[in-house]
Amino acid sequence: MYAATAVTVLAGKGITDHIAPADLISRGGLDVVALLVLVGWLYRRRPSAPEIPLVLAGLNIGLFAAMSTISAGKFPAGVGFGLFGILSLVRLRSAAFTLRDVAYTFVTLVIALCTGLPQRQTWMVVALVAVVLVAVLVVDDPRSYAPPTRTVKLTLDRIYPEPSLIAADVARRFGQAPLSVAVDEVDYVRETTRVSAQYPAGPDATAADTGTETGTAVDAEPREQVVVS
Image (cartoon, rainbow, N blue to C red; front, side, top):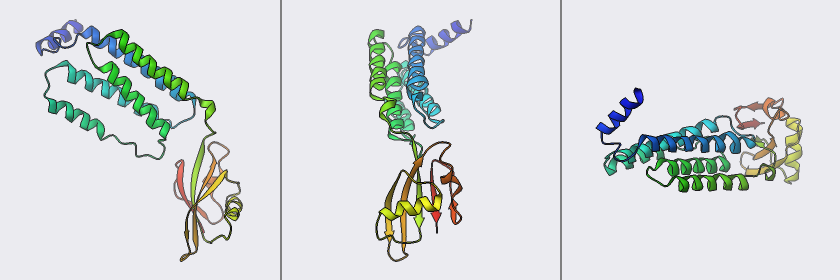
């Protein structure tokens, strides 16, 4: 009954002339299956930020709905540009986003574009989505990545004559040797040195959270500012 009512409403608005409900359901099902494979399996093969799957799913479903809406009825060109303008406002501002997350975001949008256009050959859409997923499966090999790390930015109250002394001083202050230390800035006026130290991400990286006798942790996120004086 509800399905017949929905079809009647769509027909009354002239939408069924451009898109059939069966075609919309089939394309929506293909999009959901592709999203489950991409986010539920491929993306979760390596540790990542827990909120990223929600972002990917939201972008995919939102773009699929926008494409289906634009192509389903008689909309002016300005409406289409306005919808894509709204999508362009979405920016990845958090430091938790990596280049890998950006790549998966782009793939998510591509899948939504492929499945969101109506009246396309089903075999072609399935083939394009399969090619994209296979490419991600082959290229994003979890074994080719180093273990995850976290970056701790430090401001040290001295200038070091040799860069090799910085890592030893950071390890002495934090109680844990960093994986690597990069010098960001040397201030000869204030006699301070700003560095970025990398520590393993995980349960073992507790020393970077507690600080030292004179250290203060400003933020508890994966990238935090720690001032040591």
